[in-house]
Length: 127
Image (cartoon, rainbow, N blue to C red; front, side, top):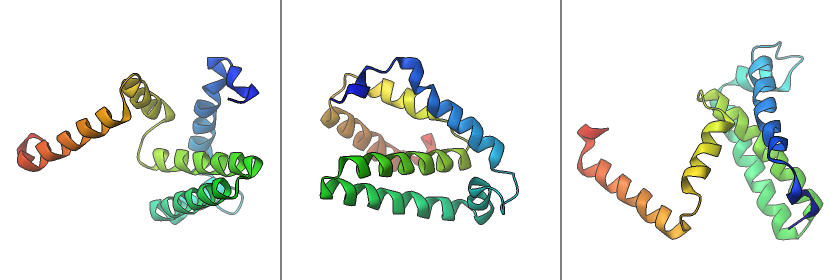
């Protein structure tokens, strides 16, 4: 754990603030706003950036470069916030899902998710 693990919970409000900035800037002039430019290019452009940033996270981690890894994760989180916004979601939606999973083993969560998919395939009318 790093020294930053002692941040107060309200410090995580930065995600909500950033989501608000994204919402404000997505309809700005694409020539003056990176966010507006990506939204103007469409959801596929945003998703492409998420994929690029995810690859850069993997590469930084593989290189063992902690400083670069943090920078790349920040880029990934930012672009993921753009993707969430494009689909009408907010960071709170992801945080709620993480809270729902809290205390559940990853294997249990994976099995439950697999069961939900299997049930949906067997009973598509319940979707």
